[in-house]
View 1 (cartoon, rainbow, N blue to C red):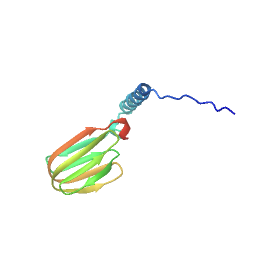
View 2 (spheres, helix red, strand yellow):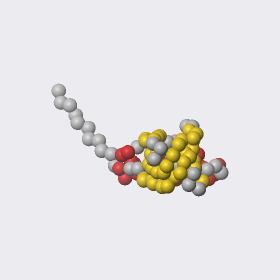
View 3 (cartoon, helix red, strand yellow):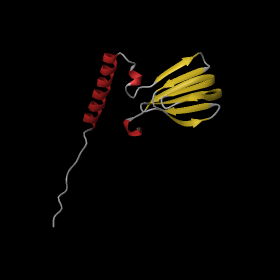
View 4 (cartoon, rainbow, N blue to C red):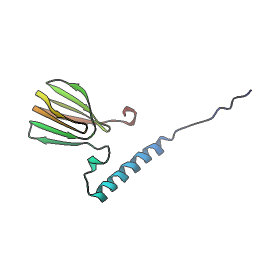
Length: 115
């Protein structure tokens, strides 16, 4: 009995176009409904108050947590916050408040293979 081999291939250009289409559609819906875009899609909003507080809105995961640095992962970005006496003051499903003497905030865009 012969087994047929099926040839499958994924066109990454189409995948990228689909994700761009999805993001554009989410932004249009948010604009139409007059609500913040970070509440609808996979966006993350980061608000700083001086060098004492950081307020992060959106889905996130805490990767590392020390008093000198905190590493946070979101769907699109990775954030590293460095400073002294850093402390997570509040944490919910979609929000995070960090307090301390913040000296630096770094972020890097994550690739599709890291999601």
